[in-house]
Length: 366
Image (cartoon, rainbow, N blue to C red; front, side, top):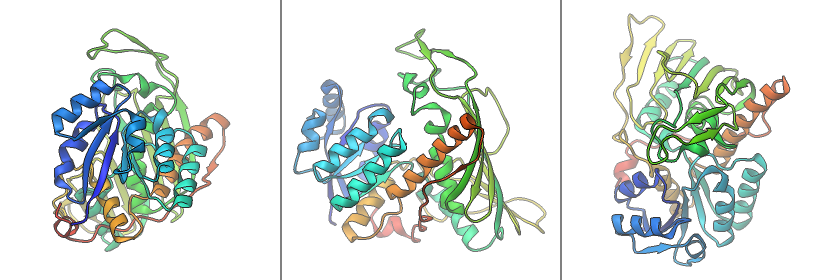
């Protein structure tokens, strides 16, 4: 099997699962890793038997590397992506694509000019749970989607994350942190969004870290932490969405979609699995639906494998950067709608990503 050589930039919390899962995906191989602190790169390289531990510039300039996985903090996403593209490398990044729309557009335009691929997390919509939901909608189980609800409501990350300050800076907050999972899943299931409306607030101007190693440190909150929005899809469907770092407890579903013929309960879009439930208009109760494939555990890196497959077979990737840019546009639009007291008409759109073919994981050796 053909294989892309990959370098990872960023050795933070999320890097572990990417490195652990790499052995599941035979069409790419991590050959180098870099971090702002070279010691952290060396530790990860030793832990996962990676041949090279680099500074970031060394990795980006290595001619052996075909694709860069960008796991830096959001504020650095655009800079690292552009440098990778300048060095002739494809880029797959953690969410969001960039902090600002202008930077996201610059990344996509430059990649197109260079003939390179840009892909972006989240890749959870490629997992068994959302793919099963996609198949149910496409097969007409709930008819035409009319409306939806989406809820991500937690107390915040300072209770558990080892270095949570960036979640409360520009490019953070519940919409930019967790919104990409929900918006990407909704777009995969119902298509692009044409208009958004939002109301936002910052409930606590300061947060206290209660996790180690920074227990007791204060964080000045610089971004809204309670975001309520309405999404109008190009298809005509309407969705209510809440993302919150200000909620202790709730009993609301992750995502539900309501159609002309029934309703669909969608699993947590921050996971790859189920359960998936459907209730048709004449049904007596909810039915759990078997998942389409075996991609139901923590499969982070699946998006890299899908993009590598697209590169190697010269096709459009399902995880294409246009999807991530549309999500970025929508997130900014919800914030701007609140600030300016008006609807926001999106300046972007994207193709609804195609379903993974049945048996994708078997045929690709995943």
